[in-house]
Image 1 (cartoon, rainbow, N blue to C red):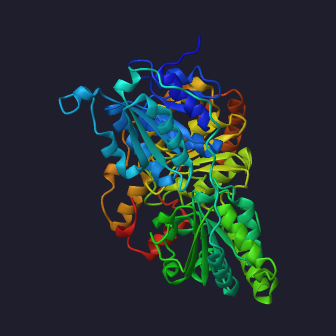
Image 2: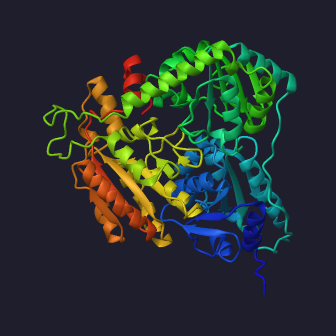
Image 3: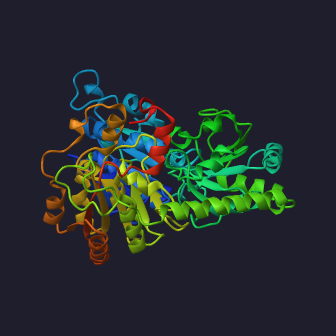
Length: 579
């Protein structure tokens, strides 16, 4: 007999709408996770921590391209998920949060685990709704999925009152998946934007994370080729364009690799597609404020947030890029003499980037004054470790990153280079520490056939360690490269710039992460030379095939600071930096 309880109807509705995973912890009574186990097409991912669950939902959505469901309950369960949901909101990740509300008689009267969830999550959500009647249930869930994926993707919240779950069973009617809607920009505004871009002598294209759900990579590439413009991406937009394409110049802002920063400084027109141009994207790019900006986004709220555009084009990233290309194709700027000069300039910059940043690094002397006492293996630098990792896993792997100090080297092209088949998952502007491991778990679950690798610091790995048992239970092969500086590198760096004490940023207790990995059947290796790491990466490939976790630790020194960080801090006082 078919289960028709309210939770089962909710699970069926979410599956119909296009969701394929429910992440969470089991509730006291059977709930959405239990119901989802019996619904074809839905997978259930049990986690040990709701914060990790929200990050796993982000990782899964990024790889699968489908909205993820986070199942929580009122009280501490909901509150604990908020840090991960803060990151999901920052990233524009399509996450549908389904939670319960205590019985109405307990509200305002000391009801057990009652909390005003809508008020707590209000700043993070696109929409929240309280389902108080069984007839609202399927409507609320389908509308939640629609809003999670349409417009600027994001977090939505559905609260289901206890009375609905104990009342009559709502009706379930099979329905088609919720579709992602596409729209074109105003034709006249597109023409105006095309004229501005065609008249520019030094145009630049910036592709953001909004290009990914739109599948805008081919359209952005075609448009850039017509313009003869270098293409930069934000961290979230990485992978929109193959970074070995002749026009690809790596990341923008904090993560720009010299000498590509010169292309940004000299730009006379910027075409930003699918990015809100958050602070990290603008760091070290002071000239942007005075540059002609053409801004394309599916969400009108993206415009006039950081900068006022000369032209704002509201529409789907792929569709609008196609519209602009159609306006330029008859007389492409790249085919002019000025266009040829621009292409030559970009080629020269790319070649110099490779010469500077792919040459063997020269480590600091072992007795450098700021070297951590008692640390060995100074021969291997963070950039070298990252290059070896990429050689081992390829350019099309799923790459998950944190945003600590040393692992920020991984944001720098050509130290790491990804192609258009890669999936790149990064924290958003909130840069939550501990994001990486649970996001990697969600990503690996979404596509077991792909190699999933995480680059993080030792502090971030410790903070995300609650996700490790889930990876083991699911048999997920993960490779984790830990750049270990014995503490929290970013605040240590900022404090050093300010001449402040850094004692609190250094760990004194022995690390327990490697013991935890081994206890759960994973492999660990501490690598202090290129040979050590190359051999360990060979072993990691076998461990991945067995569905087990490998953690490779490379000791790094405080002086191994990413070039983008050095560039930005040289231009601005440390007090202006984001922590």
